[in-house]
Amino acid sequence: MKQVIVFGGLSAYGFPISEALAEKGNTVISISSALNSKEKAEEDERALFLGRNALFRTVDHPKNPIREAFCIADSFRRDESANRQLKAKLKPMLDAVAGSSKEPAIFLSTLEVYDPNSVYRGEKRVVRPITDAGKRAAQMEQFFCSACRDRARNKAAIFRTDLSQMKTRGSHTALLMAELIAAPFIGLQIFNYDGGSKSGEGCNQKLKDLFHEKFDWL
Image: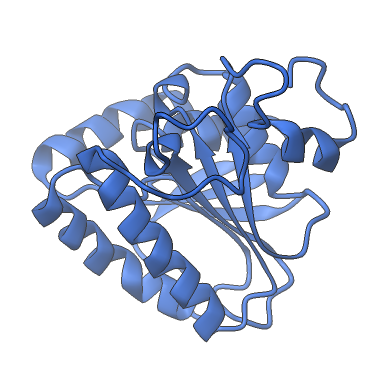
């Protein structure tokens, strides 16, 4: 099992990911992504559910350089000002990620970066966001990709999904994020997952190929 640093491990989207990682036997180190006292109080409330787990802990700052697997669970905000604050908070951690590490860096994003009118829903779909969430997510994806390239990170992935499916504990979406930490891929990859996708639309095919039919619900 791995040691995994999760930025936003107690955020609304990060909590189910942290839980899924710990359930698979990984040691989870959560870094707060809270931008204000309300968000910090919400993190503290979620910590009550995971705080008793010996495989979960929180720290203010990870050790430098970061050689562990690194998951960015709280990756963008719809509000442009808040998005800038989040980027400023995330930047020192991305700067600390060791390019020589063989462990993956995984970035949680949204399917809203795509043109919603496109029939094809695979990874080669054109990024053309029209919503505020899609626009902010696309900006942060570029920020993440630049950081990975600057540090010659040899294993990184952007996981795009319907984020409304992330808030359910034990969801397939959180499980897939946890599985990607140990998945056998190389380079910078993009994976799409939509639990409501129909066969032939291409959305989940790359994940099916990666996991070799491990999950019959994909």
